[in-house]
Length: 576
Image (cartoon, rainbow, N blue to C red):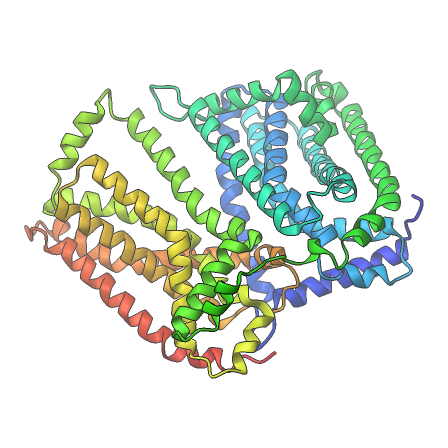
């Protein structure tokens, strides 16, 4: 490979990895979690996803699904994940990272830099990519295939992972080099965030609707058949094969018997090698030109502009809470990376869960009309079993929403090095934390709460029942979010160089698991208060539900008192 030097590659790759580890640890006292906790969380998260896909693949294998079908489904899923999650990460890692200017001053070839950064990017994405592999392994186990087939499937999937990531960079390189879209980082992030959001929603909705068979609800075999049909369409087939060339040899490898397994894998390796050589040639010619064209320009920083009235309002006389609140809202709305990765996620996840739940409810309603469902909802009160059922459903929705409480753990980290500017001012960190909490609650949780209120009104719940369920949802999510904010404030990541580093650091999985634990802890006692009278056969009327609400109020007030007390003293001790 012209322009590639192995010694330079090893040195650059090691420097990049060490730099990201220090960024994960953040700045200041106790700025990040340890490597052991990150590994444990990664293994745990990978295990949960792998177990679900393994069970689904095992079911398809027992139903007689072919290895070719399993391979194509795995590759289609891999490409979809890479397009929605990997493309922006690849562009940010290769072109928007803060260390680019440093490498420009070194006597290192563009090909070496691209491969060092690509290897670092692929090391992080490989954990996500490999989570899809258990689906194919489940099909193998269900079919009872031999060891040779297992080895070939694993090798083929690894080649697909490499090919897809290389293909993403091949697509990104000419776009960054010649397109004006990427010349403005904010505009690129906004456009790509919108496109990826619509694409992700389309995948979820089409898969869910296509997998609904009317009698048994959502069926895995129906979903697999539908996705396979989409992947075999001529235009889609060409697109998938361009993004993952080994897919073109899937029929030869898995559809012609065991004799063609080895030849098919060698062909896949050859196609992947062609993409590797092509990327090496193009990166040597275009990478430095693309990076130099953006260095110091709008692509490396935000181009936010403020009107005179906004500046006058910002420097006007107002409380610290109002000042921090307005800054927090502007930060979430105006910074595309934060809006796409934190706010949109909090909007879309409940919508997807609600759609899936609605589909399941329709499938199990045995022909009940919407009017009949509304009539049943209108009779539900807070007394007895009906009150607990409503409370449990609301708690379940709140639990899934609270899984995204990890975004609140990033609230302080969003300020980055600007946080230390507050240390030079007479800052009230209690107002600072509560303003962070209020800003993300308004922007992220507000629309979800409005949609939930509309859903309750459409169902026709009695006013008292509606207010109680809405209060439970608001209190449960607010308590989890505030507790998550306090935990994040104890270990903020303040050393990131670009916004994408904040959301893609190694702590993300740890924070997601913490959100899961917090949700269970916050809602365990209120739900126990509501269900114990039913278990013991005590007719307490609406008191169990009201007791659950009182417990949530007590939990929230206690956590708020801690946020305005000990948590603020911890923030005041963080040093650069």
